[in-house]
Image (cartoon, rainbow, N blue to C red; front, side, top):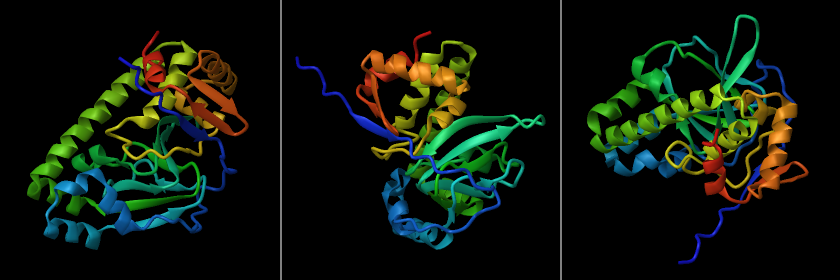
Length: 255
């Protein structure tokens, strides 16, 4: 039996200079909101009336790199979708130390847990690069849960995948093995449930990989070189090419 072909993915490091979090100047993005909704995995099970309401109620906003999309503690009144660009979910301690929980590539919807509970958002959402974000009101989100069984089923799968992500993240962060943590950070960008339409190129710097991995930039760089030596990734100027995603996923669970 022939081995399955390796999946080759390119991660770009074209991280643009960080701007003020108050700088929300609009930037041109090619993704249309209607197209984004129609391409979303959960849209398939909706009937015409449900789709019509989603299109009527949803709206989009553009954010410059470094701008804050949602502030920690703000009301969770919208479900969020990364239409274009890349976002990160983070929190900042009272001492001013920022901890990143996840990178959110384009094509992903997120924040459903806080919206379901109606609690203040327990994290901030920041644009890593110029991004366009979709907003679906909480009332519409809850209406879909009540009216659409396929949407509810999709949401259960989404929450289950989200739980699995954070359990693995906590497990990963408790171990000091840097290479496994970096491997997890990269491999999780291609979670088929959470990030089903991850594009071939992601604008993410080594510094952002370090933050998402909870490591210093020096240790992150060393781990990336170890992964390259093992034949899992190839580093180029401004790029990280993933040569073997299954092997990278396997490496992320080794301690």
